Length: 286
Image (cartoon, rainbow, N blue to C red; front, side, top):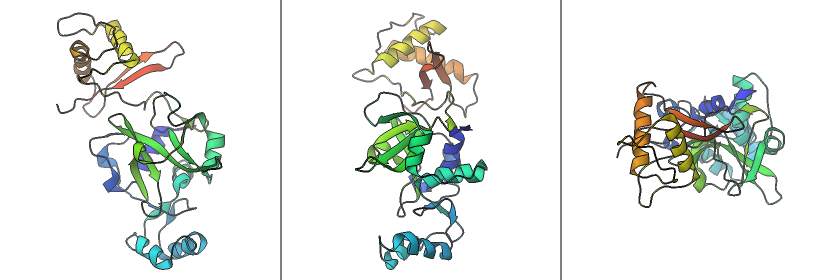
Protein backbone atom coordinates (compact mmCIF):
# COMPACT_ATOMS: atom_id res chain seq x y z
CA UNK A 1 0.00 0.00 0.00
CA UNK A 2 1.34 3.43 -0.95
CA UNK A 3 1.28 6.72 0.96
CA UNK A 4 -1.25 9.00 -0.67
CA UNK A 5 0.73 12.10 0.30
CA UNK A 6 3.66 10.87 -1.81
CA UNK A 7 1.39 10.78 -4.85
CA UNK A 8 -0.04 14.24 -4.17
CA UNK A 9 3.39 15.80 -3.73
CA UNK A 10 4.53 14.19 -6.97
CA UNK A 11 1.40 15.46 -8.75
CA UNK A 12 1.98 19.01 -7.48
CA UNK A 13 5.33 19.01 -9.23
CA UNK A 14 3.44 18.55 -12.54
CA UNK A 15 0.97 21.46 -12.26
CA UNK A 16 1.03 24.66 -14.31
CA UNK A 17 2.85 27.37 -12.31
CA UNK A 18 0.09 29.95 -12.84
CA UNK A 19 -2.37 27.67 -11.02
CA UNK A 20 -0.43 27.55 -7.73
CA UNK A 21 -2.47 29.45 -5.12
CA UNK A 22 -0.13 31.81 -3.31
CA UNK A 23 -0.37 31.68 0.47
CA UNK A 24 -2.40 28.47 0.49
CA UNK A 25 -1.55 25.38 2.50
CA UNK A 26 -0.34 22.72 0.02
CA UNK A 27 0.99 19.23 0.59
CA UNK A 28 4.25 20.36 -1.05
CA UNK A 29 6.07 23.65 -0.40
CA UNK A 30 5.06 26.13 -3.09
CA UNK A 31 8.65 26.60 -4.24
CA UNK A 32 8.76 22.91 -5.14
CA UNK A 33 5.48 22.89 -7.07
CA UNK A 34 5.21 23.20 -10.85
CA UNK A 35 8.79 22.22 -11.62
CA UNK A 36 7.72 19.93 -14.49
CA UNK A 37 4.33 21.11 -15.85
CA UNK A 38 2.37 18.49 -17.78
CA UNK A 39 -0.27 18.85 -20.49
CA UNK A 40 -3.48 16.87 -21.01
CA UNK A 41 -4.29 14.35 -23.74
CA UNK A 42 -7.39 12.20 -23.47
CA UNK A 43 -6.66 8.49 -23.06
CA UNK A 44 -2.99 8.97 -22.19
CA UNK A 45 -0.71 7.92 -19.33
CA UNK A 46 2.44 10.08 -19.36
CA UNK A 47 3.09 10.26 -23.10
CA UNK A 48 5.74 12.55 -24.54
CA UNK A 49 4.30 15.51 -26.44
CA UNK A 50 6.43 15.15 -29.58
CA UNK A 51 4.75 15.91 -32.90
CA UNK A 52 4.23 12.27 -33.85
CA UNK A 53 2.35 11.66 -30.59
CA UNK A 54 0.23 14.76 -31.04
CA UNK A 55 -0.66 13.67 -34.58
CA UNK A 56 -1.61 10.21 -33.35
CA UNK A 57 -3.86 11.51 -30.56
CA UNK A 58 -5.60 13.90 -32.91
CA UNK A 59 -6.40 11.07 -35.33
CA UNK A 60 -7.44 8.72 -32.53
CA UNK A 61 -9.40 10.98 -30.17
CA UNK A 62 -9.73 14.60 -31.18
CA UNK A 63 -10.70 14.61 -34.86
CA UNK A 64 -14.38 14.38 -33.91
CA UNK A 65 -14.10 17.05 -31.19
CA UNK A 66 -12.32 19.90 -32.95
CA UNK A 67 -10.76 20.88 -36.25
CA UNK A 68 -7.09 20.23 -36.87
CA UNK A 69 -6.50 23.99 -36.89
CA UNK A 70 -8.05 24.30 -33.42
CA UNK A 71 -6.01 21.35 -32.15
CA UNK A 72 -2.78 22.76 -33.57
CA UNK A 73 -3.48 26.17 -32.03
CA UNK A 74 -3.92 24.61 -28.57
CA UNK A 75 -0.81 22.45 -28.76
CA UNK A 76 1.49 24.88 -30.62
CA UNK A 77 3.14 26.18 -27.45
CA UNK A 78 3.62 22.75 -25.86
CA UNK A 79 7.14 21.49 -25.32
CA UNK A 80 7.93 18.67 -27.74
CA UNK A 81 9.96 17.00 -25.00
CA UNK A 82 7.36 17.38 -22.25
CA UNK A 83 4.61 15.04 -21.11
CA UNK A 84 0.83 14.79 -21.15
CA UNK A 85 -1.66 12.57 -19.36
CA UNK A 86 -5.39 12.40 -18.72
CA UNK A 87 -7.18 12.63 -15.37
CA UNK A 88 -6.87 9.05 -14.12
CA UNK A 89 -3.66 8.81 -16.10
CA UNK A 90 -2.02 11.18 -13.62
CA UNK A 91 -2.42 8.55 -10.91
CA UNK A 92 -1.61 5.68 -13.28
CA UNK A 93 1.61 7.48 -14.29
CA UNK A 94 2.65 7.78 -10.65
CA UNK A 95 2.04 4.10 -9.95
CA UNK A 96 3.66 2.96 -13.20
CA UNK A 97 6.76 5.13 -13.25
CA UNK A 98 7.36 5.97 -9.58
CA UNK A 99 6.16 2.81 -7.83
CA UNK A 100 6.96 0.31 -10.63
CA UNK A 101 3.37 -0.99 -10.65
CA UNK A 102 2.18 -0.80 -14.28
CA UNK A 103 -1.36 0.55 -14.06
CA UNK A 104 -3.89 1.75 -16.64
CA UNK A 105 -7.23 2.08 -14.85
CA UNK A 106 -10.18 4.21 -15.80
CA UNK A 107 -12.03 6.57 -13.47
CA UNK A 108 -14.97 4.23 -12.93
CA UNK A 109 -12.65 1.38 -11.94
CA UNK A 110 -10.89 3.64 -9.43
CA UNK A 111 -14.27 4.46 -7.87
CA UNK A 112 -15.41 0.84 -7.80
CA UNK A 113 -12.30 -1.00 -6.69
CA UNK A 114 -10.01 1.40 -4.81
CA UNK A 115 -12.44 3.65 -2.95
CA UNK A 116 -14.19 3.56 0.42
CA UNK A 117 -16.07 6.20 2.46
CA UNK A 118 -17.95 7.13 -0.70
CA UNK A 119 -20.43 10.01 -0.58
CA UNK A 120 -22.13 12.67 -2.61
CA UNK A 121 -20.46 16.03 -2.13
CA UNK A 122 -22.48 18.01 0.41
CA UNK A 123 -24.10 14.96 1.99
CA UNK A 124 -21.41 14.21 4.58
CA UNK A 125 -19.68 16.37 7.18
CA UNK A 126 -16.48 14.33 7.10
CA UNK A 127 -13.54 16.77 6.80
CA UNK A 128 -11.70 16.72 3.49
CA UNK A 129 -8.28 15.10 3.56
CA UNK A 130 -5.14 15.49 1.50
CA UNK A 131 -5.34 12.85 -1.22
CA UNK A 132 -9.10 12.46 -1.08
CA UNK A 133 -10.46 11.70 -4.55
CA UNK A 134 -13.13 13.94 -6.09
CA UNK A 135 -15.21 12.44 -8.89
CA UNK A 136 -17.67 13.71 -11.47
CA UNK A 137 -20.46 11.38 -12.54
CA UNK A 138 -22.35 11.56 -15.83
CA UNK A 139 -26.14 11.40 -16.12
CA UNK A 140 -26.02 7.60 -16.00
CA UNK A 141 -24.05 7.65 -12.73
CA UNK A 142 -20.74 6.53 -14.25
CA UNK A 143 -17.62 8.30 -12.99
CA UNK A 144 -15.94 10.19 -15.84
CA UNK A 145 -13.45 12.56 -14.16
CA UNK A 146 -11.27 12.56 -11.06
CA UNK A 147 -9.04 14.96 -9.13
CA UNK A 148 -7.49 14.93 -5.67
CA UNK A 149 -7.42 17.26 -2.68
CA UNK A 150 -3.91 18.71 -2.58
CA UNK A 151 -4.29 21.51 -0.03
CA UNK A 152 -6.51 24.23 1.37
CA UNK A 153 -6.94 27.95 0.91
CA UNK A 154 -8.39 28.81 4.28
CA UNK A 155 -11.01 26.08 4.60
CA UNK A 156 -11.61 25.65 0.86
CA UNK A 157 -10.20 22.42 -0.60
CA UNK A 158 -7.80 22.82 -3.50
CA UNK A 159 -7.74 20.12 -6.17
CA UNK A 160 -4.92 18.82 -8.35
CA UNK A 161 -6.31 17.47 -11.61
CA UNK A 162 -5.50 16.86 -15.25
CA UNK A 163 -8.43 18.93 -16.43
CA UNK A 164 -8.60 19.03 -20.24
CA UNK A 165 -6.50 19.68 -23.34
CA UNK A 166 -7.00 23.44 -22.90
CA UNK A 167 -5.79 23.43 -19.29
CA UNK A 168 -3.38 20.57 -18.61
CA UNK A 169 -2.47 19.57 -15.05
CA UNK A 170 -3.31 22.32 -12.58
CA UNK A 171 -4.66 23.28 -9.17
CA UNK A 172 -8.31 24.29 -9.00
CA UNK A 173 -10.77 25.29 -6.30
CA UNK A 174 -13.48 22.83 -5.34
CA UNK A 175 -16.06 25.64 -5.36
CA UNK A 176 -15.26 26.42 -9.00
CA UNK A 177 -15.51 22.86 -10.31
CA UNK A 178 -18.37 20.43 -10.93
CA UNK A 179 -17.32 17.37 -8.98
CA UNK A 180 -20.25 15.32 -7.69
CA UNK A 181 -18.77 12.62 -5.43
CA UNK A 182 -15.93 12.13 -2.98
CA UNK A 183 -14.13 9.09 -1.59
CA UNK A 184 -10.92 7.86 0.00
CA UNK A 185 -8.83 5.50 -2.12
CA UNK A 186 -8.04 3.53 1.03
CA UNK A 187 -8.06 0.13 -0.66
CA UNK A 188 -4.91 1.22 -2.50
CA UNK A 189 -3.40 4.05 -0.46
CA UNK A 190 -2.51 4.71 3.15
CA UNK A 191 -3.90 8.05 4.33
CA UNK A 192 -2.08 7.92 7.66
CA UNK A 193 -2.85 10.53 10.30
CA UNK A 194 -1.91 13.66 8.36
CA UNK A 195 -3.77 15.75 5.86
CA UNK A 196 -7.04 16.71 7.48
CA UNK A 197 -8.52 20.08 6.60
CA UNK A 198 -6.78 22.83 8.59
CA UNK A 199 -8.93 24.87 10.93
CA UNK A 200 -8.22 28.58 10.58
CA UNK A 201 -8.62 30.14 14.00
CA UNK A 202 -9.07 33.84 14.56
CA UNK A 203 -11.19 36.15 16.68
CA UNK A 204 -14.10 37.28 14.52
CA UNK A 205 -17.50 38.92 14.88
CA UNK A 206 -19.59 36.84 15.20
CA UNK A 207 -17.26 34.37 16.89
CA UNK A 208 -16.30 31.08 15.24
CA UNK A 209 -18.08 28.42 17.24
CA UNK A 210 -19.12 24.80 17.22
CA UNK A 211 -18.19 21.33 18.42
CA UNK A 212 -14.71 21.55 16.91
CA UNK A 213 -13.95 24.62 19.04
CA UNK A 214 -15.39 22.94 22.12
CA UNK A 215 -13.18 19.88 21.49
CA UNK A 216 -10.21 22.21 21.11
CA UNK A 217 -10.98 23.94 24.41
CA UNK A 218 -11.33 20.59 26.20
CA UNK A 219 -8.02 19.37 24.82
CA UNK A 220 -6.16 22.60 25.61
CA UNK A 221 -7.49 22.43 29.16
CA UNK A 222 -6.36 18.81 29.38
CA UNK A 223 -2.86 19.75 28.27
CA UNK A 224 -2.66 22.63 30.74
CA UNK A 225 -2.84 25.56 28.33
CA UNK A 226 -4.65 28.56 29.79
CA UNK A 227 -5.57 32.09 28.84
CA UNK A 228 -3.16 34.96 29.49
CA UNK A 229 -4.41 35.20 33.08
CA UNK A 230 -3.68 31.55 33.84
CA UNK A 231 -7.37 30.57 33.84
CA UNK A 232 -8.75 27.36 32.34
CA UNK A 233 -10.95 27.87 29.31
CA UNK A 234 -14.72 27.77 29.41
CA UNK A 235 -15.67 24.81 27.23
CA UNK A 236 -18.45 26.70 25.48
CA UNK A 237 -17.49 26.11 21.85
CA UNK A 238 -16.85 29.82 21.18
CA UNK A 239 -13.53 31.05 19.77
CA UNK A 240 -13.11 34.25 21.78
CA UNK A 241 -10.18 36.18 23.23
CA UNK A 242 -9.37 33.68 25.99
CA UNK A 243 -9.43 30.70 23.63
CA UNK A 244 -7.12 32.50 21.20
CA UNK A 245 -4.73 33.29 24.08
CA UNK A 246 -4.51 29.58 24.91
CA UNK A 247 -4.04 28.69 21.23
CA UNK A 248 -1.25 31.28 21.00
CA UNK A 249 0.43 29.78 24.07
CA UNK A 250 0.26 26.36 22.46
CA UNK A 251 1.60 27.64 19.13
CA UNK A 252 4.47 29.51 20.80
CA UNK A 253 5.42 26.40 22.75
CA UNK A 254 5.36 24.29 19.60
CA UNK A 255 7.43 26.85 17.72
CA UNK A 256 10.33 26.24 20.11
CA UNK A 257 10.24 22.52 19.39
CA UNK A 258 9.49 22.34 15.64
CA UNK A 259 11.55 23.53 12.65
CA UNK A 260 10.20 26.75 11.19
CA UNK A 261 9.38 24.92 7.94
CA UNK A 262 6.98 22.56 9.72
CA UNK A 263 3.45 23.26 10.88
CA UNK A 264 2.80 22.11 14.44
CA UNK A 265 0.09 19.50 14.67
CA UNK A 266 -2.24 19.20 17.62
CA UNK A 267 -4.40 16.11 17.81
CA UNK A 268 -7.08 14.84 20.12
CA UNK A 269 -7.25 11.02 20.28
CA UNK A 270 -10.71 9.52 19.93
CA UNK A 271 -12.08 6.36 21.50
CA UNK A 272 -11.47 4.32 18.34
CA UNK A 273 -7.83 5.31 18.13
CA UNK A 274 -8.37 7.82 15.34
CA UNK A 275 -8.45 11.60 15.55
CA UNK A 276 -11.46 13.73 16.28
CA UNK A 277 -9.49 16.92 15.78
CA UNK A 278 -6.31 17.76 13.97
CA UNK A 279 -5.30 21.41 14.02
CA UNK A 280 -2.44 22.78 11.94
CA UNK A 281 -1.24 26.09 13.30
CA UNK A 282 0.82 28.74 11.56
CA UNK A 283 1.32 32.41 12.27
CA UNK A 284 -0.31 34.62 9.63
CA UNK A 285 -0.19 38.34 9.01
CA UNK A 286 -2.75 40.18 11.11
